[in-house]
Length: 354
Image (cartoon, rainbow, N blue to C red; front, side, top):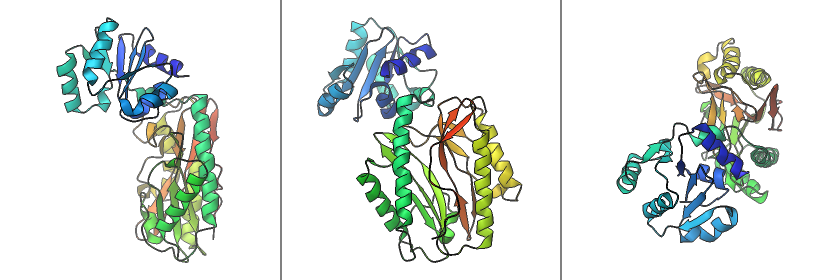
């Protein structure tokens, strides 16, 4: 599988003779190595090197068995120069968008003028998932759905937002996740109007709207979902808003398919919400890609001209947020298909009143 991924790198630009990979997620994607502080050097003639230090040598030999593992012993640039010399490589391309200026300056000083930034990002290649990746994301989604079902039995008046997070964390770890894919959002009452309202010691009260946005990391791949629930009888206005958000999301999901511009999908949901007078209450993008990172390409935003491709995995998460009142967001994770999308998130979107 990794060979096919590496091939995509070299087919993107015929000038690339060799490439130096520094971003952790891209090292994982192209080698299956899951450790830290390690690098790849790949050549067009299919030489594959993984440069690491003593701490990760044995792990690298197991996880990236098709690579030549080099313990660079703190002399990274000397190891790179040796590889370039052995393979008669004249130019080395690197992930310019991932390097700090100081690291680039150091590289240039040690390696010379034969280094060039890639004309594209590996992240663009990663935006389209293969079958193995989709299966891992599905496992992460499955744990997240089960965790949501579990937490509904835990939430009640008097429980704090932080206690909800702690219970979710305990559940996902017990069920095979490595941990959360990002810091969860649990925002109750008026705090639910905060799109990124991370949990506090606020106690959930009868009558509260509660927004729960979380996901888990399963073997390096992420999930992401949001549901808004009600503890006790909700205000009629919040029920109305909930239904608007739910319908906006459904319309966007029905519109998604290969070949559609990301901004067009965003517009479907945004225009529907705007038709009820809430355009300025939906201030964030409709969604984003998910994979080895929780925020990846593509972006479902009003500014994104990117075209959806089959097997991209994206969130669809419209919301309405009323300051000092409350908010509603509903989020699914979906896989783009040729003629539609597959909704991975299985948790109900019907109104939940606890």
